[in-house]
Length: 381
Image (cartoon, rainbow, N blue to C red; front, side):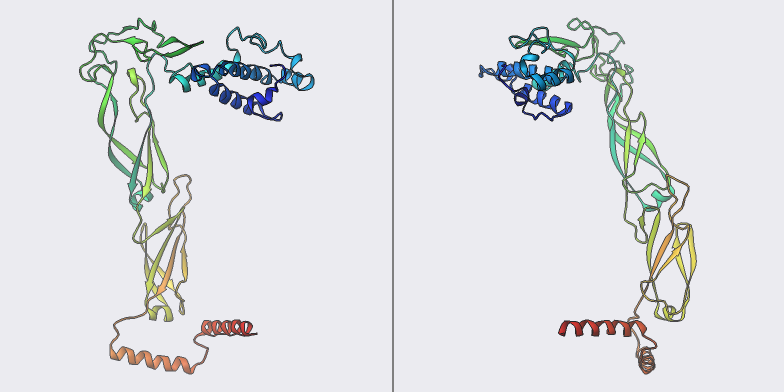
């Protein structure tokens, strides 16, 4: 053992952090645990080497001494009987790590094991889809969720007569100690299943569980301004806890249906509105839909298709502040269809007058063709 490098035993470098050393020890200990390697006679020695390496390297003072003077300087400081043997049990956070290892190997262990007494119920998560108007203005929704609720006849105790007695197997602790090879492992009591109490006269309604599956009806208040992906927490509305323990929480994840008119981005609303050819040319007033009703918008003469107008304060009131977003309306000039012969003749007459005016009536057209000509000249050299 004295000839081996402690860093090499754990598979790490000399620059490893304490977190990396701890992680490497857990990995190595699980790999060479004797109860997982019954057919490997060398596993136990490698397991002991890993423990010794960790006992030294986890202590910064011992680690510094080892790095400077070598293994002989710390051979008696392993905290577990030196290189020849590992007596005295697990010390400090080595024991904590082994609690995790036992949990992985044996399906139970000191850490994470259920203790006796009431336990908090699990949290419940559901998805809720709402209309855009409901998300913006707020709404109350009634929902039915299948969940575990406290049994009424036994008040969540699981006992028909309300009487329980201390488990004789674990003496009310909820845990029992079992021998696993060379180690003593603490596991959940198989008789009371960690409750510490047993029931001689179980409730017929819940079978002694103290809770049962039911559809629970709840009223959920959706605050005004919520958006896609927001989450609402209802404290104590999740699953009832075992043994009469407190209920968990209910989390409602909000999803908003696509709207036929508006698109929401943050606290802003966007919409598109078609306008006729004459309004775009001569100007006029159009009515724009908003969350608070219709408003009139003045369209200036010679408005181009795609022009966007901003209506301040007509967006969404934020759920997180008192500010209100804006509404942006983009107008699109609609080309007339199903024209009569008379209408077509009028348009032809208009076309003649526009062409006669040269580029005066179509400044963007002239600029575009100038850019095209310049581009083609560059391409042809």
